[in-house]
Length: 207
Ligand code: GRF
Image (cartoon, rainbow, N blue to C red; front, side, top):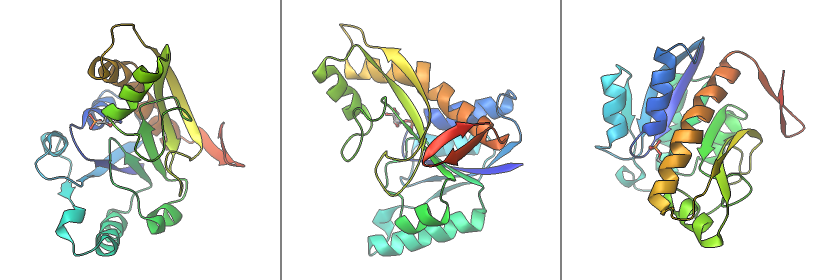
């Protein structure tokens, strides 16, 4: 049974997709052991509590320094003993010590087709604003393993989504979430939980 911890920062629609997929049997051999948010009072914490999943808030704002936060954050993760750490709209940089310790066991959902519109400063609505500014006709989402870089880890899966002429960033974000993110993340968790994915030479191989 794969023990997953889901890290969130805001609305938690990707968390909800995971919760619903476990309940519907689309994700098997997996338990969501805990949810951790870096922000208090966000909807994602309410979603976890409603699903009976232990929820914690660990915010950098509550610590004297980022180093202290990083230490406490890693200690909490270790206490949960996850096999997989899922970043679902999580907006805090993962401490390098955590990336090393949980190498190839941290995944992230990014709302573009990496390597487009990713890296430092590309998160949330800004990703879609930049895509619309560039006039792309196709965008999408990517689920990937997390390494020391920003959105640079091995790509697990991607899904393309059409961009319409009258799209606003908000409309495009919603379409990418509905048509790509909410499918890719649960599918990746199920693939990992059932041994269908491995990383070889920095690339994801499906077995
Ligand atoms: C959204 O911008 C989504 O594209 C990205 O994180 C943000 C919040 O997602 N993955 P969620 O509703 O908190 O899952």
